[in-house]
Length: 204
Image (cartoon, rainbow, N blue to C red; front, side, top):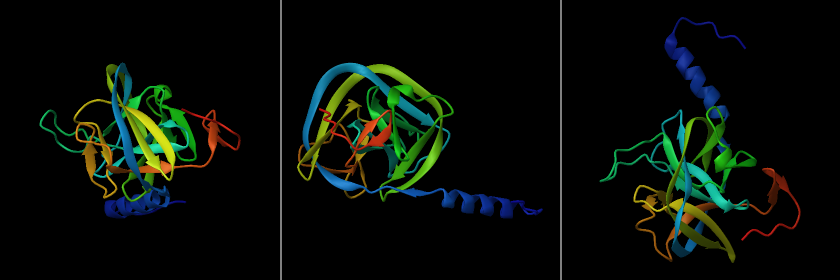
């Protein structure tokens, strides 16, 4: 396809249309927090993208391949640090991140990889990783329940780390409590090398 124009606005508008065609949808459902526990030190991953994320956007991360928490971007200012809207402090190195129909381990992400940015209403788009930072930090275990199923993730224990409430609002790990409801994505399949498989897989 060739576009012949001398108007830069036409180019910009055309690129917006192309980007909208790449948009995906992800189903998000509310899950109830049932446990929050400090677990000590571990290696966690910050994903710095080549894009600006808005409030209500983040990435889907979880310790199990069939349950992902919407971890919010650092797109809000805090009393401790200015906003870094290109970043998601995604969690411990072992965790899965959802990228389209596949998953990757946080530990294997690197510059140039694609990740999926997801909004509170389930709109998803691909963005490029600019940098990955792995550092040793205090971690907290978060467990949530959806229709009798328990899902888990490990996040850095810091004020700036946030999930997304069922109302679409960022909620800090520091303020999270049992009974709170947050947005998650649930799947009914297991995974092997990041690909969906239909077999019996138990992840605890």
